[in-house]
Image (cartoon, rainbow, N blue to C red; front, side, top):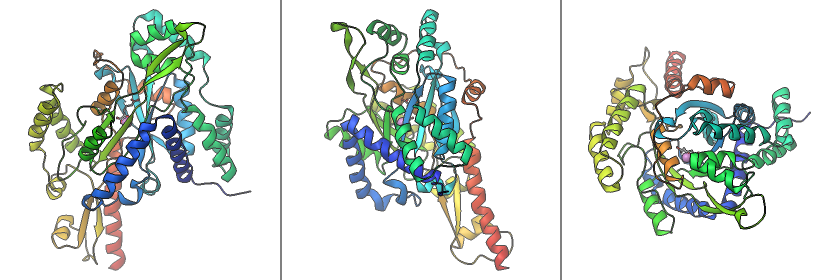
Length: 444
Ligand code: OOG
Ligand code: NI
């Protein structure tokens, strides 16, 4: 019997294969990768994040949109084979996007270090689509389609049964799973059905009218998103008019994101005559800059200040930028204060032999015996995600639906609970403190 390939290795191969495929499908994504590589090289010294170097070149996330509970539950099983687990619940309906989502990602520190690839995965909420008759058409369309290859399904079952995949099976698995993410320029419904679904919501057309849930963007991580945003414009990529998330700061927190607008791509509809040619707008490219993970207290402050800034409106990018900077003046911007006030999570690292006894973290830091490194935020932000969705739907902002988070229904459809992101970061911080305690005891 040959040895099993580590899920971290399968994930890295899959992320690479997906990036290669998307570069061929959407050449602008290749341009984006070059911009980010250049800027990262230029700003590497000033990065400020100690754990980002090794993984930076391969770091990215992607996104797909699914139609049914069965698709979501199967996707969960497939992604588990490559060490990606659902973390967090995002309700996008409040922003007029009829989906709710989770992020599949590695959770162990060593796995994040090996390859942090994440997949933002959304499920259509058919109950929000109007008019009701259209929901019946949508259900029929979804009942007909099969988005996974037989090979992907059987290899997933094999991995579950045997506890992993050997070399040959792992490579076959990557190739089979990639098929689900491929773009198809042939719609599965006629032009009239497409138009009716698009009229109900552009996302409904994107999710329902194609053979599978094509990857709709990939996102490399940059060390200077403002510089990258300017460079995008210079290279002819039509960037979103402002960066989502917190403003530029000395101490980066959470996540800042911007994208270039989705392409208008030619599609063919089944049938004969000129009604069979059309276009579809869904696929784009995005960049992100990651900062420190915030505690619930820090996150509450972030949410409050962001709401304050957005209350004035986001229509005028310059005005919004000023409002954002003004609101976030109230968010401490040095690591010591962020740590002492319990606003962000840190990993503690001994700089020498620690004195015996229960470690007093702040005293040890003051003595230079302990370093505290901010823990990188690995997740997403619902308001930012909504902004990214909206800028790529090829239309104006959508009407909001009433707030109706449905986490329990989502988890039922997923067939599992999503992990709590705060608990994961708190666990990483605590693990580093426990390790200090152990080293003190061992020395004593
Ligand atoms: C997902 C948009 C959300 C992000 O980075 O916040 C997202 C989508 O358009 O399907 O990817
Ligand atoms: Ni994204």
